[in-house]
Length: 360
Image (cartoon, rainbow, N blue to C red; front, side, top):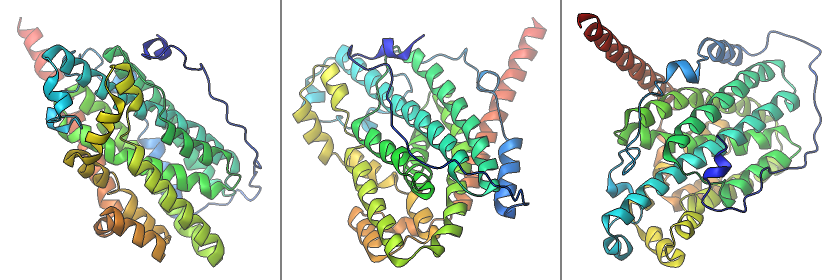
């Protein structure tokens, strides 16, 4: 099935072309590399999984509330727009809003696939090339998994303008570290927090399982960016570091202010875009969600050394500076543990079902 056929707008281009200009770098040293990255590379190999086999795709979703999310998590909940709707209209809003979210996950994963493949070519160190190659496979699997999940929704959406703008910058910039910064830190960091809300709040087992397993991989990807940039950024001049910090601040504001802007969804549902945007902008749940999106980014940014006054001031303005005290490694361990818990529950359910079938 082509997801383009599920877009509620008919005039979406079948492809997006981003011109690139960068050097493909061969490493002739073939040295043993940094122990931390080689350990992460081994972990990336050991933890490969098959989206077809690990996930039970026979599980279905509820048409009226696909991921079984509470209505309170909906940015329009409690608004005059929501109150005027009958139950049939609310069902459509739930389905489209949740599909819009998963669509952005899918679109972001394809962007990460391309960025990781660019890193393999461009980064000068062989150990980084090794790990990035495992990430390419991870991202392909994530695209596969989210596509299969979206097919169950019966509706999908293209990449939003703000995400496309940041991905465009990540792919066009000829400096390898800027691809890391945009994708491995900002986009992947935001995605981790967004995936976590579904893993922890949704009640649909399939949606929770998909996001838990993707998070297990993504936590390693963010660690890869952190370890590589932490080694590289001390080598930069003050002017070079200031340029990265300026880009980082702009990228974070861009994603914070517009990541929740679902204008194309409101249009598809024939809702008043201006009214919907005005309500969601002041919605407490949206404001909280925007803050939570940065819980993975802030401690990473501090750890890699982009912690000048402009960055700290921006995070204080956003109300997310307190996330600097979180431990990225502990967050990664927690993501891995929760994924294993989903595996254990699936195995238990299968064993019980098998025992029941045998008894019959």
